[in-house]
Amino acid sequence: MILCIETATTLCSVALCNSSGIIGLKENAEGRSHASQLTILIQELLEEYNTKINDIEAVAVSKGPGSYTGLRIGVSVAKGIAYASSKPLIGIETTLSMFRGFINQAVKKYCFSDTDLFCPVLDARRMEIYYSVFSFTGNKVKETRAEIVDASSFSEYPGSSVIYIFGEGASKCKAIIKQKNVVFDEEYRISAGSMHIPSYESLLKSAFEDTAYFEPLYLKDFLTTKPVKNILRK
Image 1 (cartoon, one colour):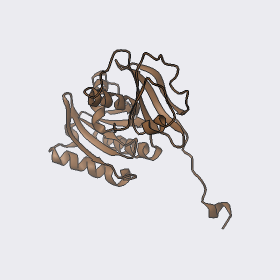
Image 2 (cartoon, helix red, strand yellow):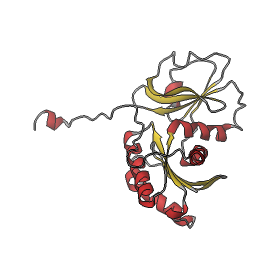
Image 3 (cartoon, helix red, strand yellow):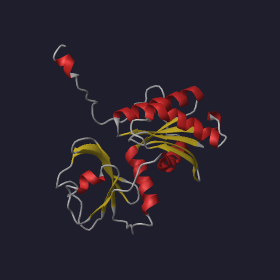
Image 4 (cartoon, one colour):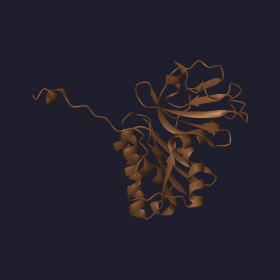
């Protein structure tokens, strides 16, 4: 079994998975609850399925891109569990697990073809998004990046290819991108359950992170603002 942790967005999600699929899933959709809820959800999940940390094979965590605070909390907890239990740590790129989850969930909703392209999108504030582009077979057509959305976004791809844009940033894209070959799916929600396939692929390949030095994929620097009273020296 693998313990999967997903905190890249406002959803706090944990799952127990085996090679066949999802065993159990716990989630909290209340924004900014990661710090208070993540360890509780993990404990509840393990207790519900009568599982101890020593029973799992590895700890997998969404490594980004995504929310700076969410990623920092998720990775910190995952590293702590992996280090304390001497279990390997697996980092899964957020857009990859989104792609896997979307393909599995939407296969009955859409008629996919070999030429289709898939774009998992995360909100990066203002008019910016984090995204990757995948082919139907899972090959990454465009590397993960942060980019400002405009009317020409994704226009480099042939009109014969249907581009599926999904995730929390889909609505932002829909308001600007008007290409006829783009399908926006605003219903898809990321989940720790979507990590089970890439996590087991990494486990079989022994593609593990260095627990001591592993850091999330932030893509952008974390920006803070000074309180007004400090600026005014009051």
